[in-house]
Amino acid sequence: MAGLGVRLFTDEHIHKDLAGTLRDRGYDALNCQETGRRGVSDEEQLVYAAQRGRAILTFNVNDFYQLEHLWKATGRHHAGIIVAAVVEDLGELLRRVQRHLDTIGPDVQRDTLQRLARE
Image (cartoon, rainbow, N blue to C red; front, side):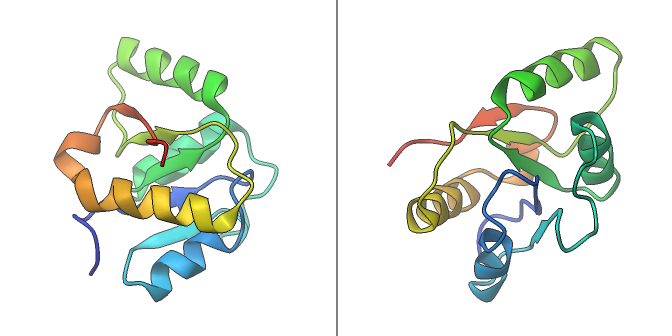
């Protein structure tokens, strides 16, 4: 498997082809479209990802910052939240996500909100 072992789940705002392209390159990635989770609330997406040991990747920065604080305040755990400003270009998004997955391991990602680094 590629990367350091973070298992990824992308929400519906992330380009739908990202997860498949990452899988083709050896990463463990799923998107909400292929799991039938379009139109589900942010918190429900986080619950889904957390129950499956997956970090969630989202462009919905403000809502997930709030969820991160709520979950910490109530002692809930997740496999990680990765946020980024909207990246329209799939190639750029792919490079940035791969760099993240190649440098951040599950132990660092767990229960934290990480910002996806710019190129």
